[in-house]
Amino acid sequence: MDSGEEYPTTEAANRPGVQALAQAADAARYAPSIHNTQPWRWRVHGDAAELYGERRRQLGTLDPDARLLMISCGAALQHALVALAAQGWRTDVDRIAGHRWSVSTGVADPIGTAAGTPDDDLIARVRLSGRSEVDPVALRRFQTMMLRHTDRRAATNEPVDPAAVEAVAQAAVQEHTGLQVLRPDQVIELAVAVQRAQDVEIADPRQRAELARWVGGTRAAGTGVPDAVLPSGKPQTTVPGRDFGRAGSLPVGAGHDTAAVYAVLHGDTDTPLDWLRAGEALSAGWLVAIERGLSLLPFSAPVEVLSTRQALRHLLAGITYPYLALRLSRTDPAHADPPYTPRLAAEQVIEIVDPG
Image 1 (cartoon, rainbow, N blue to C red):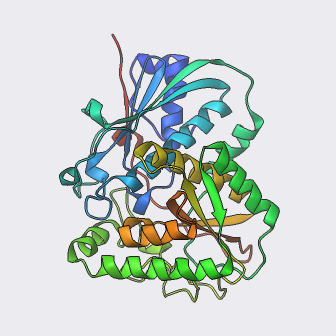
Image 2: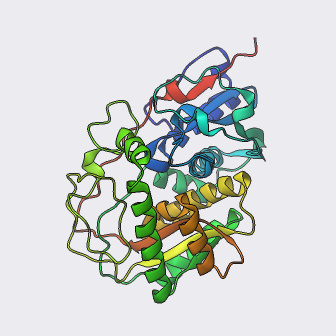
Image 3: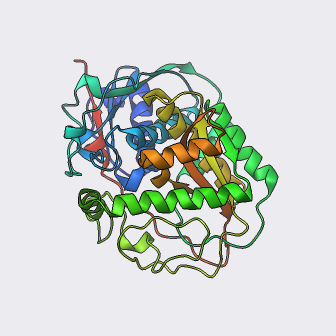
């Protein structure tokens, strides 16, 4: 269960419960997040690990209401819960996520320590409730977590198994989030929404500047999206990939997305708690997708702009609210996976408190 990273140690960290929680928080560092901002912190003390949103890594211009921050933190929470189940721990989870996030607090500094997080940034609290048998499914998912990565290349032309898509959908439902697969005509509407959202954001110099702070270059600070995982050109796909304003060094691939399946994560209400659960669903579905030989690519652009978010809701018949769009496709065994994106060191996102 050791990831190879060291986290802050105190006398408290030697206790089994604290050690398990610290290891779970360490595993959560590998969760997906918007532009790899890793906008979370963990505070471990006693029998609990508290998950906080990190305002210094919130995208204040692209994500002013913290919608994508909450989704990112939900993915981190799900990673931690899988890690604890894989160690044979039962847990109780308090999902708080009801506080308000100020637009003015989203700043560009990607570095910090885990100390000094204000209580009003608390998103969730995980408590250990006892030991149990090691969950073999959770153990397999924990191992899969270390293999997960984002592949932005063109999809292969190999058809996607409907049973695999259904398994991903069921994983989302277990996290109280729906997954609606789109019809071909709806995929065209999704493509229009994605392009429109990107046009709006590219036209805003503040949003372009914020994106540039997190994307491209060597990313030595441990956050952001390096050139090595960005396609070297524009993939020939129906739904356009994210326009980061620069080309990377990753070969695009010869495939198209004609065999890919597109879907939307959605729910009955549109609150920070819903966004948190959507992040848990994203993470759970992603791990199942990997187990089924699928590549999962999230599309956040159409939910970042109000008009295109409403367009996605139209695809859901105006009944439920969209949280994120996804592409599911077959992986190509003939091509090596993209490299992994960097991660902040454990001591920058985990604080172990000794109650004295």
